[in-house]
Length: 388
Image (cartoon, rainbow, N blue to C red; front, top):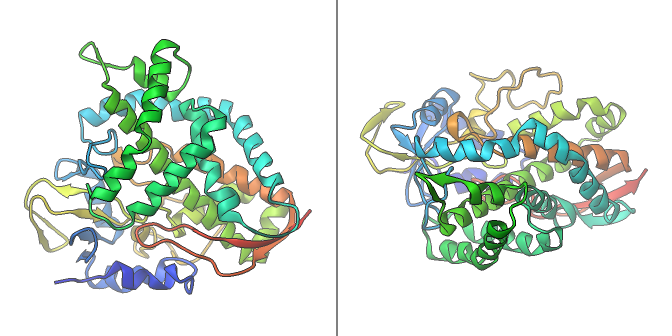
C-alpha cells in the first residue's frame, strides 16, 4: 500500500505555487513517519528527524551500496571500511586551508560571470550562473582546464536531466554516465605522466595493497564529484537567489549587512535542501518506526523533511537569520555527509555577496521552473535586475 506520493505532494513546489517544501511533508510526517512511496520502484521514505538520524548513522543496517549508474562510485556508493579509505584520500581537497586558498579564484569566476548578467534588464539566472558556475568551480578542484568547463557542464546537465526518478542502474542513466569516460580517461593519463596538486592527481597516486587504483574507479569517483557537486550547489544558489528575489526586505537587509549572508545561506539550505533525500538499502529485516522492512528494500532518509520537523527545529517553516546554531541535515548526516559541503557553502556565500554588491534590486520576471522530487532547485529563474 502506498502511504505517501512524492510527486503529488511535491506538485505545488514543482509548479511554483508553494515557495518551499514545508507543506509537502507535514501530513505524512505526522501520519506515517516511515512511509511507502511510488517512486524508484516502490521504496520506503523516512520523514522525521529522529528516524532519519537512525537510518543515516546505522551504516550496518542501511547500506549506501546503491550503484545508480550501473558501476559503484565510491565513496558515496560504498560502506566502511572501504568508504573510510576513499574519504581519507579525498577529504584534504575540501578542507578549510585548501578552500581558503581557492576562494580568490572562485570569487574571480563569480565576478566574471556576474558581470555578464548584472547589466540591467531581464535574464535567466539559472542558465546564466546558478547552473554553470558550480561546474566551473569543480573543474578548478579537479584540475580540469578552465577552457573545458563548458563541456563538463553540458555533460552534468544531461546527467541531471536523464536522472529524474529512474531506478538505480536504469539504461538511460548508465548510458549518459559513460559519455564523459573518454575525456576523463585522457585526463587521468595526463596526470599519471605529469601529476599536479589536484583531486585527479591525488587519486592517481593512491594505492590499495600496493596497487594503483584502476582507471574505471578513478573515472567513477571524478564523475560522482562532478554530478553530485553540481546538482547540490546549483540548487543551493538558485534557491537562495529565488528567495531573495521574492523578499525585498530580506534582500535589502543582506545588502546593508553582508555579515548576515552566512546565516542566510544556512537557512536556505535548511528550508530548501537541494537534495531532499538520499538512497540506502536495508541489509537485513528490520523494524523502523513501527514498519517491517525487509532485507534488500530501499530506505531513503528524507533530510528535507527532517529539516522541517517541529520536534527538532523551532518554527521550522520560518526563515530566521537569528536562528543561531542551525543543525540542519541539508548535506546529509554521519559518514556520508557531503564531502563538498564546505565548497558549496563558499560558492553560495560568494555569489550572494557579489550579486548583492552589484545590484540595487532584483526580482522575478516570469514563470519559475523547479525540478521534481527529490531535487529542490531552480531549472529556470527569470530575473529583472537593476544594477547598483
